[in-house]
Amino acid sequence: MWTLGDVFILILVLAAVGVWVQHDRFRRRALSLARQATEKADVQLLDQSVSLRRVGLGRDDRGWPLITRRFGFDFSRSGFDRYRGHVDFRGQHLSEVELDLGDPHWRHEKN
Image (cartoon, rainbow, N blue to C red):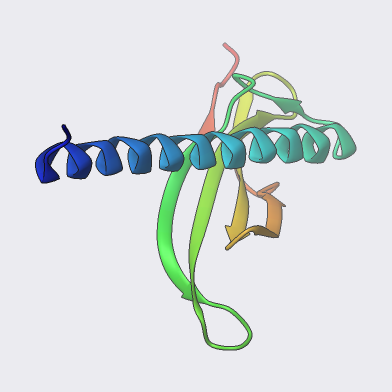
């Protein structure tokens, strides 16, 4: 027989698995969008990965709360420099994909 504590633990485990699955879905989508953006800009996606940089709360056009996510990635023009980019989501929808093509935050100087 299940106790109330067992049911509570089961709900927590199912919720944790649900959050992880949803996060993985967003991460995969962000990686795909980062690959597309870097290919279009003719630059190299470094490390072939994205990382979650920020999670927050925002509001949609009607004022309802939603979760915002920013996934960051690094890319290079020449292989000797490193630039940053990000993919933003507002709720379930893509908000923006940006490549910072200004000054790199790290540059390997040739000797």
